[in-house]
Structure formats: structure tokens, C-alpha cells
Amino acid sequence: MKIAILYNEPEKGSPDSQDVLEEVLLVAGALQALGHEHEKITVPLSGGVREFLGSLHRSAPDIVFNLVEAIGADAGMHPLAAGLFEAAGYPFTGSGWGALFSTADKRIAKAVLAARGIPTPPWTSYPEERAFRRPPGSRLQGARLNASCKKEKAKMHFPVIVKPACEDASIGITDGSVIRDERLFPKTLPSVYRRLGRKPLIIEQFIEGREFNVSIIGRREKPEVLPPAEMLFANWPGGGLKPRIVNYKAKWRPGAFEYKNTVRTFKPAEAPLEEIRRICLACWEAFGLAGYARVDLRLDEKNGPFVIDVNPNPCIAPSAGFIAAAEEAGYTKKETVKMILEAALPPPAIMQSKKQKARSEEKATRLSYRKTPVPEDRKTLERLLARTGAFDNREIRVALELFDDRLLKGAGSEYMFLFCETGGKAAGYACYGPITMTSGRFDLYWIAVEAGRQRKGIGSSLLQKAEAEMARLGAKYVYAETASKRQYAPTRRFYRKNGYSMVARVPEYYAPGDDKLIFMKPLEK
Image 1 (cartoon, rainbow, N blue to C red):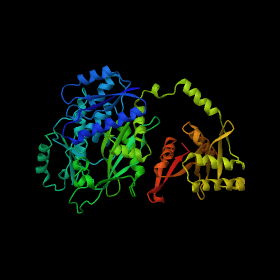
Image 2: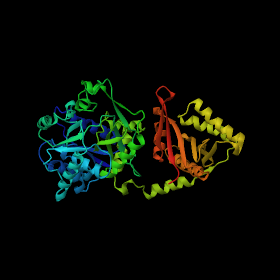
Image 3: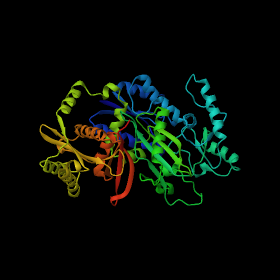
Image 4: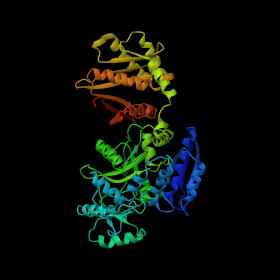
């Protein structure tokens, strides 16, 4: 395909806008590796949009990779680019105009969250009498938002945090943004307003607890929540002397204390991760997000999550949190760009051609399955496991011990096998069995596909057959374990692709730096 990478020309001397150039390089490199033709088109800082629309029409791309973060110097206007793509009929990556518009102004985003019952800190705006931006023809929208604002204001208590209503990337946020003394508030607020260029502000009850960034990527079936990241405030002074926030310095000033001591971890301790994932998916639905997004949350003293920001089309520079979360989930940068691209394609483009579908069906019909092991299978399994390159000698020895147990005890063994063959030769196998002292819970002990037949759908087909067999035997949930080492990234991707979710992580289980990851899939719908 021919792909146009659309991005805004960054402001000189502004580090928060320069990272778009890193995004462009990452996307361009991934598109080249994927075999796509691409062209870079900038949205100029001055002048209208006519120039870049003309460039877009001359390029005539099949799809637009939308990296536009601002129109001119106004970040609040960036939804306009998606609106123009929609009007011109170009498929494009990421969220559409409606989602970008409703999240670009934090006052509108807060009203949507409150209306949907998604937990978010109480808030108000300043100046209150200023009209909200709203879609043309929507006369009542401003009035409704003002009513919502006043309702939320009644719930607020100090401390509060003051932020620009229509900026992102922590622009305008300093330690002084957190105001603890209610008596100083009336004098402090006007000075903050003037310092930030007399632009609308949002005042939000400050949640003192932990902060999480959760990335989501759109998939063909449903959005996937990537591993949640907690922002740790290392070496921070105690006693509330310095607010634990990711301010502008923490993001954009490499020499600053905040930059050096704000650390991302994907191993949060005792966090309500399932509730966080549920809330993030609710945000995805509430705003009609698409492609990729990030939700920022904080936990209160009771470990309750509160959404503080919703970010469609977050930064995908190599050092950004979204890319870090994707890599933690086992996706390479190229694979991440590919998924973002595929989510933007119209349905006909992501469907297999009739010829491809016919080939896939033909391959599927050539596969045969059997459950009864024979002694000759032992050497076959040993060779198959060794050739995958994924297992060491100790792991292969354990796999063979399970086979020996089944061969010796027959139906009395707790280990069950399913062999997959094509053309009379082994293509893969799975080993599974009920978990002792549980009801309807099965372990998937092993699944492997012959090295020369991987990435051809055999693994997924074998897994589906094994799941069907487990369900026949009464399984309601299937559990699978793997390691966190980089070499097992394909295994983690395989489970996620087939509907498994990571439900537990046991730190340092296999070796220093190598955690045990437990995936689970319900078989009952």
C-alpha cells in the first residue's frame, strides 16, 4: 500500500513537540520493513490547511498514518486533521474526529466520564463563565457542560490540581499546580491563569495515591489492554513537600530531578489490575476510541482507580510509554505499527481474498488429530521440541516425563495429549489436564508446533481442538504458564491472540529477572 505519514511541523525549542519527529522515524522504518510505500507530509505551523490538503491529494495514498498533534501552535485544534480526513474520504489511523474532539478539552472529557459513571475526580473550570468549545449547531452542549461542571464542583475538597483544559503532554503542570491551602486558592488561581496565557483551566480534586498509565491497542476482534505501567516517584521527599505528579519537567527536562526519578514499572504491587482494565475498556467505548489510546489513572487511599486523562493517538516515539507497554506485551515496534495500520483499514482490505481463504481451508482440511499416544511418539516429541529452539534440555526432559506418565498409566494419568498431524507427519501437540482440588479448571501444560510449520495457523487450530476436548471433559477455565523472558514473547503473543488474558505474575520465579506469567481463558460464554 501507499501510506502518507501526516505530522505537524514541531515548534523550535519546544521539546514537547519535537518528539513527533521520532514518531515519524519509527513509523517510516516500520512501514519500510513491512514493504509499504510511504510519503511524509507536514502540517505547516503558519498558513491554512489548504497547503497540506493539496499535498495529500497529490500523494493520493491508500491510507493516512495520522501523527498530527497540533494545527499551527494550537494543540487543541488537532482533531481538525481527522475531521478533514473523514470529509475527504481517506482511511486513517487512530481515533476519529469525535473521539479526538471530546478528549482534547478536558472539561468535555470529564463530563463524558461522569455521565457514563466512570470514576473520575470531582472538578470545576476557570473561568466558569467562558463558553465551552462545542460542535457547530450544538447550542445546548455548552449549557449541559456548565451544569455538569457545577454539580461536580460541589463534591470537591482540597488539595486540588490546576491544569490547562486544552493541553496535553503535561504542558503547564508544575509543583505549584497542586494547591493545598484553600485560603490561598482565590489569589493563586488568577495568577496561574495569567501565567498559562489566559487559557481555560480545569481544577480537579487531587488524588494523592499511585499513578498508572494504561495503553490500549485496537484489534480486529476487540481492543487489547496492554500491561499497565505504574509511575514510581523514586527519592521523592516525604511529608507532602513535593507533589507526586508527572509534571512538565518529568517528561521533557532530562537534567531535572523529576525526569531522573520518575520511573516506569510493569510490576505494580497489590494493584487492582482487573478493575483498572475494566475501566480502561469502558473509556474506550465511552469515547468511541479506535486504533490506539492511553488512559491515565490514579489510585486513592482505598486503592480505588480514578481516570484523570484519556489520550487517543498517544505518542509512539521509541521511548514513549505506549511503545514500552507494547514491548512488555511481546510486540515489536514493527508489529505495533502493523496493528495500528490494520485497525484503520476498511473491512474489505482486512479480509482474506477468496484465493487466500481457499488455501487456508485446504490447509485446515489436511490436518488430522488423535488423542492416543504410542511409544514411537516419544522420539517425535523430543525432536519436535528441540527444533523449536524455544526449550532448553531441562524443559524438554520435563515434557517427556509427562508423556512417559501417560504412556505408562494410560487413562489413569492426569496428563492428556492431543497430536496434530499432516501428511502422515507430526505437526504439533498439546498436553493438558484437570487441576487437582479444583472444579472445572484445567492446565494447558504444553503446546508446541513443528518449527517448519509455525505461523501457519496450526498452533491456533491445535489449541482450539484441545480447548474443545477440555470443555467436553468439563473444563470451564483453562490456565497456561509461561516465562517473562524476551525469548517467550511469541508465546505470550500467541496466548493473547487466542483469547487468553494474563491474570497473575509471580516475580523472580524461574530465575533472577525471570517471572512466571499465568494466562487464563474462560471456556464458558
